Length: 236
Image 1 (tube, rainbow, N blue to C red):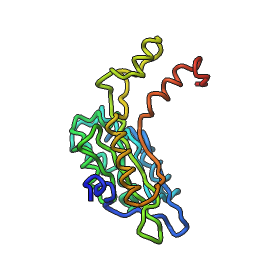
Image 2 (cartoon, helix red, strand yellow; image 1 turned 90 degrees about the vertical axis):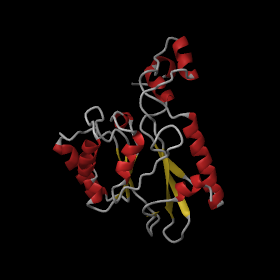
Image 3 (tube, helix red, strand yellow; image 1 turned 30 degrees about the horizontal axis):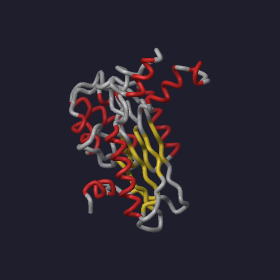
């Protein structure tokens, strides 16, 4: 079996639809807390999870304030606190990185491996392409050992390091708001990883597999629309 396919099919703990054919995902994004956190944030997370009883929690990026957390020890202490609502209830969870997660001055692979050490964290990552939290989490049918649905994660990275991007150059030529020096993008090799991984899984399953993709920073085109309402007829 191809190593990429093998990695994509692997899960530390299996995901399955229930007998009613349902699977509930709760997304928590932009927690952006520190070790000196607002207790209402943690209380709110606990209440939401207690009420919704999700099958899986996705931390959707900016899971902490990486401009404040500086060391591996601080990140571990922080995750001990903010993974507890899932870990204590034995609820599976996964994460993608947002720009503030990348701001922590640690190697990104090391950071995500710290997340993956938690018992109920089923996050995965890539090491051979741009970005880190690129993964797929297959969900199987309740009554058979076949993939029914895929949950994808894509790392939208941090600050742009190469502004030589055609769409942005065109915006500059038109003297419209530029995204350069603000946020990064999903890079082409990540898109190719997604394309090839999807095709591999579909070939393995001998069928099309529906899915949902999570990322933190939306494609630049969305922001261009918002910042040019007079040309796109978009309301702020």
